[in-house]
Image 1 (cartoon, rainbow, N blue to C red):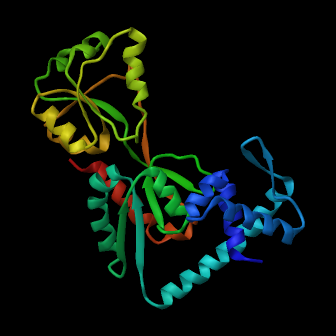
Image 2 (image 1 turned 30 degrees about the horizontal axis):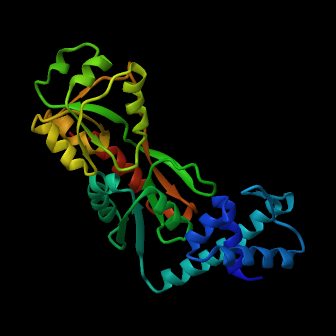
Length: 294
């Protein structure tokens, strides 16, 4: 039985799509399909049935999953053992851009202090790309938003809720509750990078039939923060990027929970427990210390 065929099967199971599996495996769709069909011939059964554009696991396919997982797990464990024997001791960490910029620099120094024998490699990329890297075992674990992908374990670590941020002395600081009409009159900066559900903010104005005054659209958080600091605008920003400024009193948060709430977390994400077991305690400690920073 060919390992490549088992991998193709598990990727299609995880991603529920031959197209997505082929992209993750850097193969053509016909190649992935051929590997699945070859595996089905070897097992003398159908693993999938097609309903329209969707692939549905058969009962035999569902029964085969744990066996395929065990074979691939054994192979990975063998590779890990060889890696340890060659004294690589390198931990590869994936992270979305926001977490890599505002949390990782603090945390990685603590991890190194606790594990001086380890070397760390960090790759910062999009949440979608992190899924591919996890499935390809190109990273040991990743920090990312909730993706709801089968086979990837995710544990909430960091609060990264989106909040309305203003500069010191802004009139909103004297308001008990800000209205949508008042918000629409302000110069707004929108940070847009595809990582958050900004449709909720747009919907806030749409429901009231009001056009927001969006003077700036940026895809870099530091630019958005700078515009607010220089009193050019106010805006909704993720908590991680403004945590330090809020604690120092350089920026302020306006309560908008009566208007909308965009709750988000950064999740520790991994395929196998072994990938994070060595650093699990250090990761939790770094999150606790990060949350206590002032």
